[in-house]
Image 1 (tube, rainbow, N blue to C red):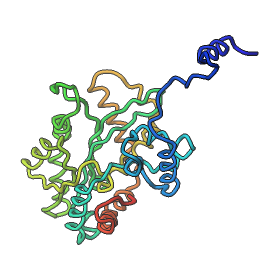
Image 2: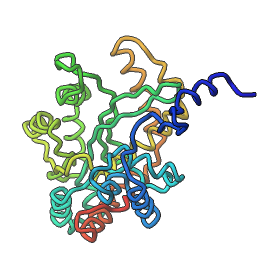
Image 3: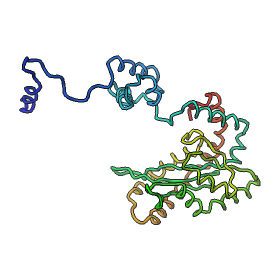
Image 4: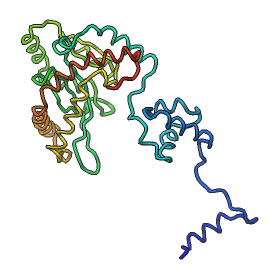
Length: 299
């Protein structure tokens, strides 16, 4: 059985001389030869990312084509997970940072460093994922914040700003936590590790004005901040114990309270050994960065 639409389309695309018209549609952005080059690159380097992949194909080939072409030959699954792209300047800064801290032993990292970061956490299931911005820091399992924060109402674009982060740290009296850590360990000089993204400038100024010692790292590079692994563990536990959290709606304070209670419960389920191991891993991360001349490492 032949559909009438097939007959109509066949007649429509046939020219008077009997030749078939070229298929109407988007013109291919890459030639057959360029496609072969892309496949060769994918086949010979299974750990390559799309960013690096794009550097090895002709410049006129778009990023979309680069991401789509391997999939046509079922090679997309070979591509490495996306990482923040490194350029020579960033790699140089990473190397300088690692060289400056290569003499720090594991115990020094455990005793003298607190880690802080922001992350977007999916509030579990549903057809449409509901995400929540979180900010936090940890010094072992005993001292830590992992709290939701919301868009700044005074921001023209309605987004999250340093003011939002400062408000959360003030609300939960971060300075008192900091002072308690110093009293407990008897170590005057401890540091909060935070990246130096431009959006953090007002926040870092606020911390410095209150006597907080900072060790800043290159922004958006989680391999230098092991708190990222804590975020991953927290996401998994939240999804397990609070699968309906994404349905939470209502006033901001009510939402914050529910999320805080859920996060506090999940935080206490984490194995304390994880925190020590992650903190100690800074020795290995620093060594790996030096060996890689500041470029990508396995963490």
